[in-house]
Image (cartoon, rainbow, N blue to C red; front, top):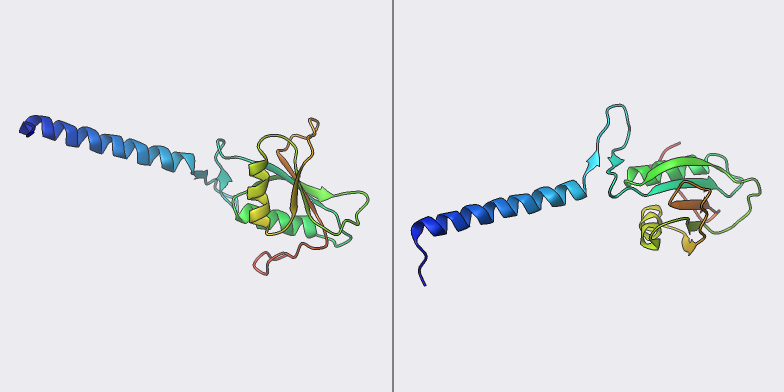
Length: 143
C-alpha cells in the first residue's frame, strides 16, 4: 500500500521528532552537571548516590584517596573521615538506604570491597564505604 506523499512526509517528520526526543531524554538521564571551580562533575539528582568514605586502617589519608578515586569515577562523596577503632582488614561497602545495586556501582568504581546491607536512618547517605588494608589506591589518585 502506497502512502500519499504528504502523509509520508508527516510520518517522517514525526518519527524524526520522536527520535530526537528520545535522544534528549537519554542524555539528560545520564548527564552530570559541571560546576566551575569543582574538580569533578556533580552527578545529576536522578542518578545521585550519596556516599561517605571512612578510613578503617591506621594509614593516614586513605579516606581522602578513596574519596578522590570515587569522585573521579562519578560517585558523589559527601563526607570522608576515619573510624575510632580501626583494624578491619577488608573493605566493606554498607547499604544504608535504597537499592543495593547502587552499592555495587560504588564497589565497581572502587575496585575492592564486599557489599552488605546495614540500614541506618540516622546517616544521611545511601552508602558507607569502610576502607580496609586491602584497599590500594591507583597511582593516578595522588596525595
